[in-house]
Length: 240
Image 1 (cartoon, rainbow, N blue to C red):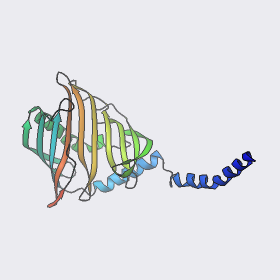
Image 2: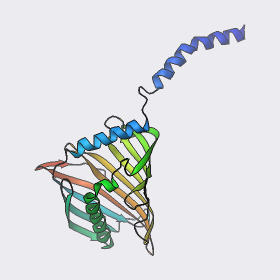
Image 3: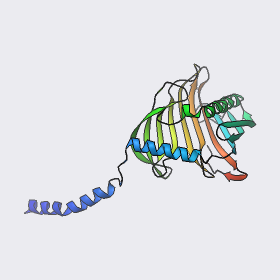
Image 4: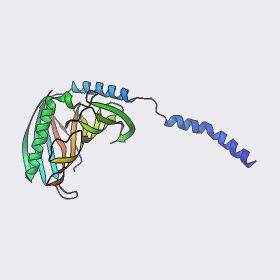
């Protein structure tokens, strides 16, 4: 009698289990290819919306973990679509090593802008594989593995977080496919993207590397204030 009761109870639960399974299953199956195609379309649409802007950007250079920053650098950057960029160093506090590194970063950005297609997260430069879905800063994202087609310093081997609703890139993280210099190794880069006055822009940066003779160093940047078409769009970013 007890065994029969357990079976009846189990059968009674089957509709509930089935309903629960349906509720938890995704409402739409989406392949890696579909995500990449929609990501490409979203990038093209937002690239067309780019307007001239300027930004005040703060950089910090850290040495050993847990210690105060060695340098703090504030820069002003002007951008004119599609590939014009100029900058000025507004303030330097601490070691001038930070200023040297920041200038190299900004010069590298100018070079990449002039050859945007060579470093774009696209099928021309990468193959992709959907790994999982997860929530990033309250937004549901597809996490894709990035596999560069070429061993070049301006391509990353890592992962990209794609907004599952808008198909815009929210985060990129990884290591350069090729080290840019004999002087640095074990480089890890993270880029953060967000919307500013209708434009989808990189708004944060973090890079850690081991520098020969100097040890491990980390550079962190955050955008403080934008000026877009004479309109101020202040970004409230958590201090690091």
